[in-house]
Length: 370
Image (cartoon, rainbow, N blue to C red; front, side):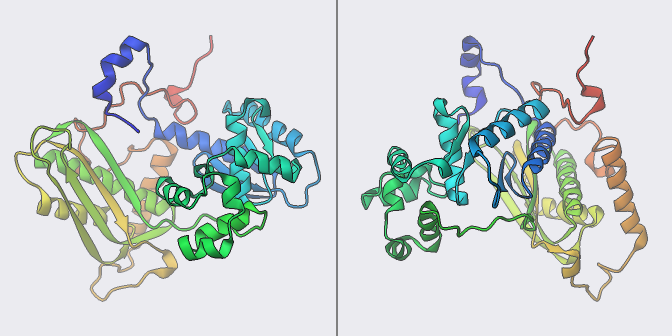
């Protein structure tokens, strides 16, 4: 689906393509504003992804098409984000309706399956390939096509028991949802994360242990802060380093999982373990292109198991220190307080020369009107 930017950079300039660097802070802030806006329109909400959300409209009696237009216009007015809205009696139908709202211009960004007659809905489903159904990927589509299930209507009319025997219970539930039977509940509370990852490609190649230590320290500290934000603790961490597979030199990628004596959310302990792991996998004379840290085997605070050797010994000063660092970085700017091992110059930091300003999250980058 994608090609490295350096391969098409010159061609892109000739075509007048405007490129932007990734701006994760802005994406997260706009996503939060989007989700907050949607909460005004339903009593229950499931945040499905950074740009998708389910709303429970059970019991509401109104013209859903008009209501969808109101939602769409309000989000545009309050956030400036163009969206599409799909209505269905199940989550699978609602997601399919959203796809139709995006792709069919005459719907004006709103599609209401609940207001369609059965023949009308079946006719629309017959025009859609089965891959447009939520959860049906390329490999599953190929298997279904071999059985003659090429469009959404055929999947809807398939025998649920046969689908379960051939493909499992998940696709059986999808078939039942296409027929209007709710099998997927709205999840208002996000499940606890299974892992927390911090990783970036380097802005310039790194070949010294010192620079790698700075990068790993940064990623370990960043992952730890995100861990504390979710009120979780880690029991193990994973560290990796690699050069680029596009290099002429032989590819080198190494990783190591480090079990911790007991669960922790302390940046100092996590970073110390990550730096130890780095020394075990570091190899000289390699021009590294990427590194990262992943925290694993996460548990909530109530799921902690203490040890006998002092690793988790209660230390109010340590807890206050982490809390103080987090509050200062939240109030002012991320990185205001950081570990010395993260370095100062950060010559390895990811290049973001074409980053748009973080208009909604940084006072120094706010738009000015004259």
